[in-house]
Amino acid sequence: MEKIITALESQKRNPDRLNVYLNGEFAFGISKFVGAWLSVGQSIDEKKIETLLRQDEREKALQVALRYINYRQRTSKEVQDKLTDASFPSEIIEDVVAELKEKGYINDKDYASQWAEMRSAFKPRSHYLIALELKKKGVGEDVISEALKEVPNDKTLAIQFGMNYMRKLKNVDEKTFMKKMHMALRGKGFSYSLINEVMDDLMEMKHREDYSEE
Image 1 (cartoon, helix red, strand yellow):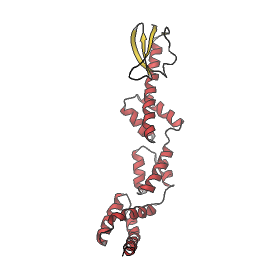
Image 2 (spheres, rainbow, N blue to C red):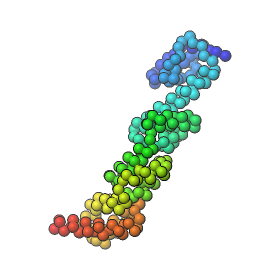
Image 3 (tube, helix red, strand yellow):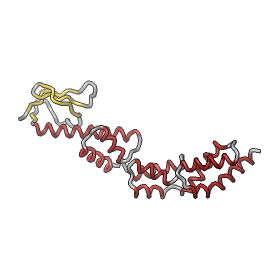
Image 4 (cartoon, rainbow, N blue to C red):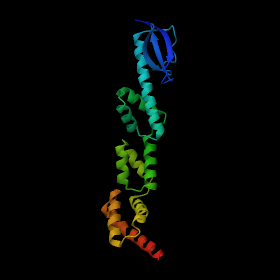
């Protein structure tokens, strides 16, 4: 059964949305983008209304996703989880994520590459720990492997971290230095064998630094 659109009014709280009145009564609210083709006096049936409401739900999901990725770059899984938490239907979530991927708004390969690069440059940690962080964000193992090829190896990262952490151990004795440095390196995911390998280098750097201050 068809109804007549008797009024279209902008919502006071959200000017980007319309209140649609059918046969003199409020029927539903809808995005102005989705309802751009509607006009007063137009007839509309239940099937068209259902289509409009589905399109409106999708538009809501898209806007939620765009706001989410506008704050900072996100992985596909992070966007999916965000929309799932907002209770959008799975088919709409899949459709929105596919569109964002196609338009390049979300790109797990770029995300993983930038994440690995930033972590290794400013917060050095092992390849294992970087990979673990990316896995938690839903990035695939193949993509992670490619990203890790672009950053220094674990030995370089361990020494880089050790040099930074050394500032906190400036006034400690050698035994305390060894213990605390070892624990800190383990906390960044480096293996025992690698820690033992780089510890001599770090101790030598500490001795040079101590000597230069005398």
